[in-house]
Length: 381
Length: 220
Image (tube, rainbow over all chains, first blue to last red; front, side, top):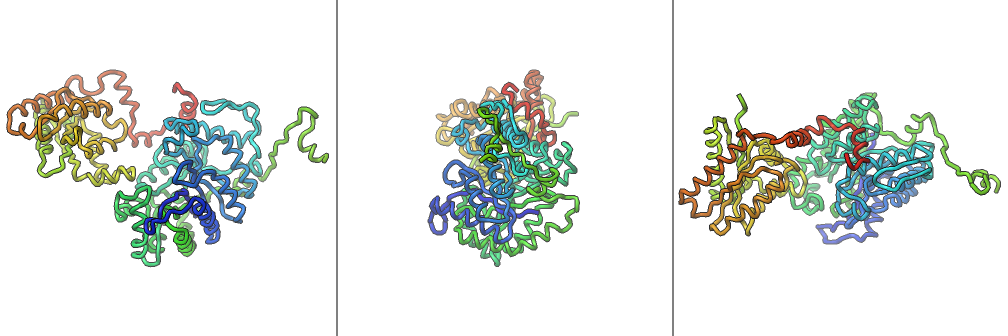
């Protein structure tokens, strides 16, 4: 079981002080949070991708590479990579490069993005969101698995004799998750490829999550990747904890009431009942989190949102300290009753092993002028 | 033995008692009577929006309905015929009324027979029915009966209102139960077959090979 955090990179005014962090502060805070995540023993740090204010989550690849250089162990991921508006050719290059730089500590989660204007800014149409996700991802897979690609589709210029570089580390593409809240087409897509499926889970009633995960599991089995309970499932989660439950409620309420996503709407009492948001003691967060399995089955990755709604960095780091304290119990709880045949989330190491070992698939083009390859040139130097 | 026809009356009056609810009740009863006169069983269900006001505001902000609102939405979706009644506010339907129809899933009212009603303090507002309410339901692809029922305060003391209610209710009963009830053409029937609820889309997902084919084929 992988446990981690995901960030959307919002720049939000702290409603208790009226202070808004600068972009620079927020960007640096994201790095500090990621490093803290590794320090307390979490397995995954994932960043979102947004191309509009009030977010600082553009250019996730620079962020992940920078964090990768300052960490040793944590898996770097995305939540999500915009497969609709980002050129799959660039995604193929960028994440293969991060694979090499971080020795395979990277995977991705594909998402469509729901901010209308972002699509035309990148020359796309939100009404084609599903079709973009399907065509672009089909191309991305080919770019990682085939050395030379001839391709023609609807949404980008054709490719002839194209080789995406660098080739994936050890000849194995990064593992991919697909995230969607309620589009059955995306659960179907994840199942078809035998990829992972991630449900945001937070902000929504558990029925949405259960419905999507059930479909993904059934279709995973349908497409021959193995029994439904061996499909690769990830969930979001959201908590605010203090040692004393009432302190957590008092401290978090102004952040909840003014939060960009759900603020000024339902009461915190209603929302903590209707959605997985848990406000309370570490023990309550532990118990609630372990209850998610009741409606999705044993799963592989749990990511928490801890740094949003204007919470100051100091508070976020305190939340991570508390998460670190319950981490052993969380792991023990997830392991309890988990059937032996339920796999862990794939990592670079397990994917390489499944592929029969690492292979170098570097492509060395022939120089048409001299008839030599770059490898020969290097050797001659 | 066919199941009774379900008439669902949606009303957006804010006061209690409200003129809008009074009118809604009368139209609902008249619709059931008109169906009974045709020999059809009818049940009339009421969805009042005032108690759903908080739930509707929450839905706008969170994107999902709470259990009470979800039940009301399902009632409307499953209705054989709808009666909708709103007070006139600022030259149009009430914001609360519009909010309810804003949060319905796309296609929820496709080809649904609908009777329009409105109330106001004076008869000067009566064209709201045709200039504001009717276009809204045209957009929602509902089939709106020709006669709308408008009641100003003074109409509650006049017999003319009953005649309009009866006429409109008769038109609704014909659409709900008449020879033309149900999909009118093969094209409409095939649209109905294609139109799948969320539950159906999950129960029988489109296979991925088909999604792949459609993604790259603009004509699909």
